[in-house]
Structures are given as C-alpha cells and as structure tokens.
Length: 132
Image (cartoon, rainbow, N blue to C red; front, side, top):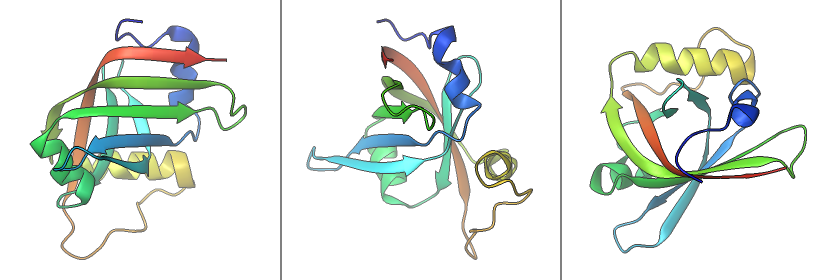
C-alpha cells in the first residue's frame, strides 16, 4: 500500500499504542526500540534523546520501520516503512511533555536526565501495511 496512513487506523495515534521502531546499525543489522508516537496528518512523529543508538542510526541512515499495535487488540496493527525527513530539537521538550500526557497521564516528562537534549523525528511513510 502506498505511504498513506488509512483513516481507519489513525485512531492508533490517539491511544496509548507503543511503536516498535526499527533502525539500522552501522553493520546493517536491525535495532528495535519501543517508542511513543504521534501523527501530524502527514508524518509519524516520535521523540528521543540526542546521542542514543536510534539517534545515531537515523542520522547515518534515515530508513526506518515501525509497527504500532492496538493495545486493545494485538491482532490489529499498522506497519509503516519510510524515512526520517526531519530531525529537530525545536519544540522537542513540549513534544515529549505532550507524549507523557498521552502515555503516562502526567503534564511533564518524568524521566529527563541532566543535560539530555530531546529531539523530534518526523517519518514520511513510504509503504504502509495494516492488519485487523
């Protein structure tokens, strides 16, 4: 399916559905990390800290894949393959606080580390698969 998120699956971004994010290590092997995610109508968005393995991998190779599983029905999911088309620190603290509200029910992200720099990644979907 082309890289458009079907309307029928956009509700996953309103739920506390984690995404399993796959990036590529320098040797080409996959690395998978659970992430909080959102959707802006065009891009799948996630947030991380600068310098983490996924950050290093994406800056070297922007190709990613994500599986977002419905927490109410694990047989219903959305798979997105695409590229990170934007990496920005601008608004990243507000973004992680918004995600913390959605996923944890708190107003401020509670796991920030001293000196940590938050980063927003925007994924342009190129291929989408759905199930359920």
